[in-house]
Image 1 (tube, one colour):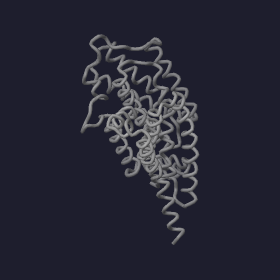
Image 2: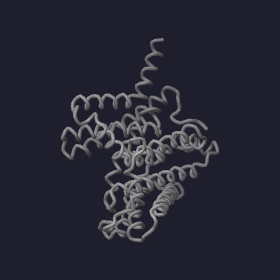
Image 3: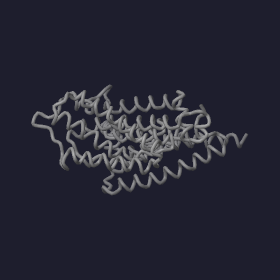
Length: 333
């Protein structure tokens, strides 16, 4: 009985420890900074500024489910938001068509990444780093190394409202993130497609013996990642309202920190959408509190780097613990 209680307590701590840490950090910062932190303005800031890193973290999560890594997402984000600005500002496209084109283009890039990884038999680290570098080159070619700045009339108000508007008193990007996280959770946890993706990530050889088309599902994962990157690029263009060719790389490390740290929450030992959402939340609360305490600029990369190392270590421990407990790290088909 005692061992069972300990096991249940350990499971609860592993699954919901990050949620508890989020609450604890919020309490500590609220007591330390009572005039600035526990305010609606701070909540609005967290929900809006962290929406793009959250979407990109979800984009990184899907290939990780299959055991692959998409290092091109930062470069893809930079290219996507520059392409939106190029089509709207310089080519005069209607903004809905420009946004749709960029999102679909992101999906096409994701398919190409998956094809290179699976059919070219190139490690995902190397393949996506190579395609990402090529996307960065295309971004520089489009912008000629400069920025795309709207004319005196600015961007269409309906386009900037994609990021700046509110719904139910909260920033609308937060609802985009929530909707995407719920959709991914449903796919990964409740549909056969998600179970197949987890099997591919757990043991590709076993998946192949079971008749699961490994290559096809890996391409699906990269395509989903590309679509999400394209959507994040649309949000970034609406937020920045200029085309900056170098801005996307700043989001690469936070995205992987969120995705890897998320694999230690909700479903410890495997990447999952809700865990990623929790991880992004705890990172956002921590960074916001540190920023309001007047920390220097270098504390942000230090925080992300240390958290990444911690996330990888915890994810590995959670996966090994799950395996020792007799529960497979993925769902069976």
